Image 1 (cartoon, one colour):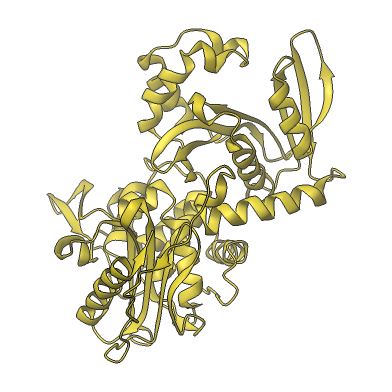
Image 2: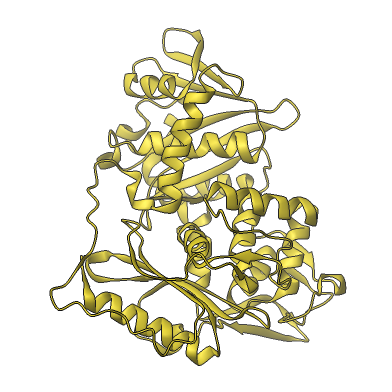
Length: 446
């Protein structure tokens, strides 16, 4: 399952490994060909974190790094940047990973950063890469004995074709990530011979959707198109938009009284908190003032942040969803079980969101009232369930009642998404989720 996440410190050992592998750097330029050390890579990453002109991503197969790519020399005034990609693990070359990754990167450049020109250099002997770039719409501009310079412009005559490619590839990646590699055969789960229908007679939920993530097949659909107030499920979209801005998790800001919008809050006004603190509290404890602080830290106005939430919802195919603010406190944030499942699959494909949402506890980086404060995840299933949870997010609002979306690991490395909206109580919500997961694994075979 090919996925992407922002480049992080945990990638330093992989950078060290790949950049010292002659097979990897054979077609990369001279400044990459010198042997590197872990110390050099740690220093490089420290400089990278403080460089707003670079935006790098790690390429993953499931949770395993297989390469990295990025945009450098980003010039927002001239609306241009340089692009590169490195596939570190040899078994993934020639399998379509480069195309998927480049499509994702081009989409970030043009749709998120609003750039108009992308440039790259490629070794003249690297014919597969040259063919890939040309098929995506890059055109040769210069050439010497060793290298070819290429450029892609958003006004390129191939833009329509590229848009179609992006829509297809990114749509498959975002909604059903395991479709990303064409070489992988996707097999839908099948009903077992002794299949039993799920008993909905006792449910208190207003909508339910159980879906096999890899194939996109719905295993159970109960009112999945019913429009419902999103409550704190909104925070998954807010997290995605925040990550899109490329803000370092080491960035800090003070929590302010003006960040308060009611509901669950972190009592730490006046304290300087890291983006990591704010991000983790928002997803684990579902605190609302920390989301407001993240919006401030993003550099976007609240209105522009919400516009990007709705734009991303449209890209994800969330056709019935509307967001009016980023915390989930406004009942006019609207979703459906079908849309939330799409959101969950995308969100939990992101390393940062997935790992935080499945974490039981987190200790803030600063002392609050002279004591280190540890927050606890409100997802009860992390503590009391036997389910192997990939990620999960709760939501509660008077108008919306109790809501939950999660992805669990199922038989034969499958992934099962379970969304429950509008249950009467926390116990009803979590018990229903457990029952649905048990039913899916007992009545479907992979």
